[in-house]
Image (cartoon, rainbow, N blue to C red; front, side):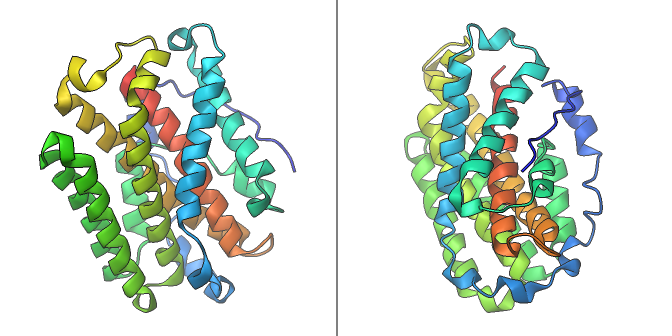
Length: 281
């Protein structure tokens, strides 16, 4: 399996993220119409919680790798991106659950982490009204999180996302299968990612040479807004990655299910770490 070749021209700056937001994944439009969904027959038995778990494990791996650098904040964008992508690549290549994943899938795990771009990709590829409705519910859950009492807000978010997940599971037979996988990947990642950043944001602040105890030094509003941006980018990235992975694995490879899972974890990890560093710096 070939390694990712890193062509890196994007800096971790807001201006660059706007440019990325105008790009498109090659042949991304109407991706869900090009998949033989009969290959997703085992989807009901899939443990979607593993996508969120693997996502957080990869984030922690990236954190530990960055901790070995003398001054992370002063690393140039090429070095940062290389470290992040290498860690994600290592996760996908060495995970037995992703055995025989085509190198092409890994090559498509990129850094288009602008939230607007990722959101547009999901809405553009969701053809059913019910999937779009659940995506709207996901956005509303984070609005509810922002409005909730600060000390209880993460529990409010977790409850809301779990309720949406239960509704998605109950409506499975009314949702196109690839959209169902994308929604479940998005929700699993949103749950895991929001919890991860809520518990570890101060550690990343310290790693990047910023003030610790962000919830007080930068106030709760900043703390919650930052978690919202990070977790949303992570979750949207997982949803887009699931679709891209499913399409790439459709003709050959280990099967759509494995390809979609690899795409969900890979896209989510890259979106997560890169968006996180951008927000904190």
